[in-house]
Length: 372
Image (cartoon, rainbow, N blue to C red; front, top):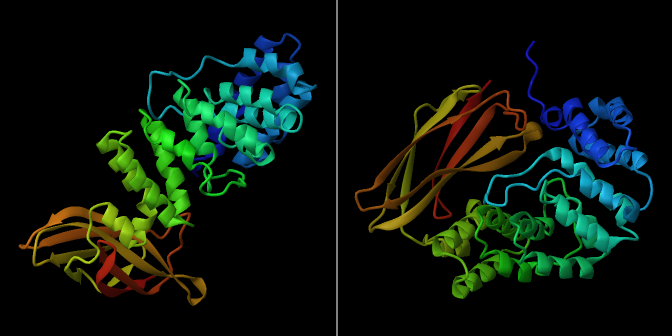
């Protein structure tokens, strides 16, 4: 039987643990690399990904006892060269260095915050310390925010990205931070003009997080940035589009308008199904015919309403087309696979509905039967 892909095993395994142990053995002749490897591997297989990060940090703490000032030099000597500073994106580093951030949290959070922040700035140039910085934000908010203001102007883009990623309201796998949504905006005012997509993507993701609770706060800030002219227009347009992606799926009128789409534009849509019934494992095929009395840009999405266990219904929005709708009309064809073995979403037989949304408004819909 074929074994499925395991992210946790790819990122944290014996080879990676041995590599980390070797770095510390080179940095400190007293470090017992064999014991470190054996101790980590005792439990590694039974742990999930984030648990593996914490466990490796715990074992490292056992083999490097003492306060943070006592072990800081060993930690720094163990680090490989920083990630290539000449790159501008997609250089995430090696996950095996994530436990070093948790090691710094354990030894430095209470009594050595300034030294800990110095170390996190070094570590994030090997792998992002966005999870490790968050306990410090909660415990030493003023000091960390002051440091982040300095980091926002740092030469290294990994350190700049730590500012926006570390303060995100909804960071995946990250501890919640006790910041008001508006508190990091002064930092984003600086970072939205960054020259690297790695940073501006984080800015956009940060804003998208905020839209879940306060859309107008984001829309007002984006309007302000348009007037500041600190970023190239093409990149600011990209930031705006990426930041508003959640609002676009929800059909938020002001977000649509900011992106250049008129929610009130006169558009009609007719949806035609290839078949009124589709089996799980097959594909739903449909054609959408759009018409308008005048030319206008359109953002076309479709929303599927799925039956859920227990009689509930949930909806998911999917992209269809970004186009210019002329008076001659526009026909769009789509084939949507209805996989029955998806690990994150189980299909349930029954009546389903598909809606076509143009510029955030539902313009046409049709129902179909999903068969087992």
